[in-house]
Image (tube, rainbow, N blue to C red; front, top):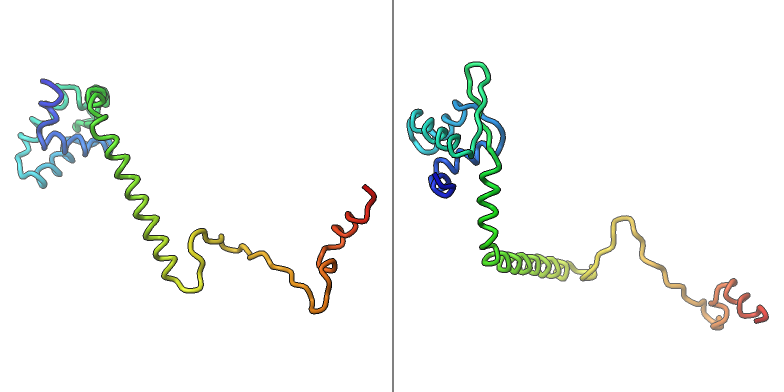
Length: 158
C-alpha cells in the first residue's frame, strides 16, 4: 500500500497523531478513536493493522497488552517527497510571517502612542535611569560647566 493511501484515511491520520504523543496501548487508541469517529473496536484494530503492515507504526507486546508507536521512517520518505513542492508554499508562509510581525509591531507602536507621557519607540528596561543633564548655575561662565579633569587636560602642555 502506498504511503498516501495509508495517510489518506482520516482515522489512520488521527491514530498517528495519537501515537506521535507517545507509545499507546491498543485499548487506549481504540477508546479515543471510537469516541471521535464512532467506529467499532474491530474497525480500529483493522486501521492499526494497516499502519503496522505499512510500516507507519510499530507494536511491541507487554504482557497481554500491545503497545503501538510511530515509526518515523515512512514519514521521512513522505517529507522527502513533499520537499519537491515546498517552493509553492514556503515563500507565501514567509511573507505571511513578515506581515504578522509588521502588524504586531504597528499595534505595539499604536498602543505606546496612546499612552500619554510615555515616549514611543524604544522603551527603557526596568530599573534603568534617564541620564541627567547638567545645567549651569545662574551667572556662571561656560568654562565653569566643564568638569575639572577636562579643564586640567586643556592646561596640560601638548
